[in-house]
Image 1 (cartoon, rainbow, N blue to C red):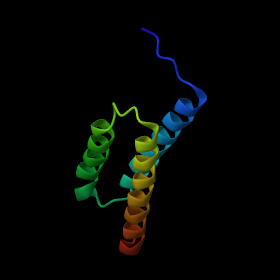
Image 2 (image 1 turned 90 degrees about the vertical axis):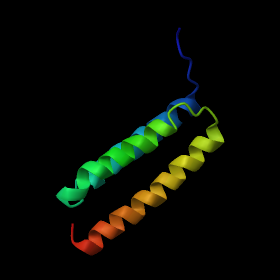
Image 3 (image 1 turned 180 degrees about the vertical axis):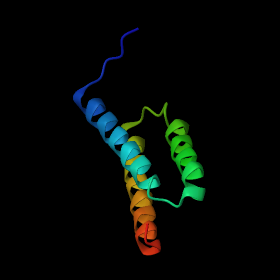
Length: 81
């Protein structure tokens, strides 16, 4: 069965993957004792929404993910990581 993507699907998928990579890179900055759990949580969040097909919902999740990532990034900065 071949999946057909329109341009919008392709762009959304690219944005999701970019967010995932950014989150994993940010997790590498976390203290060692928290790193594994943080990566696990990131993976769980991605998997939980893996089968979402609603474009509006995907856009919302990306936006929410970026906000959460920004908060994590700021927290790590404040902690000096």
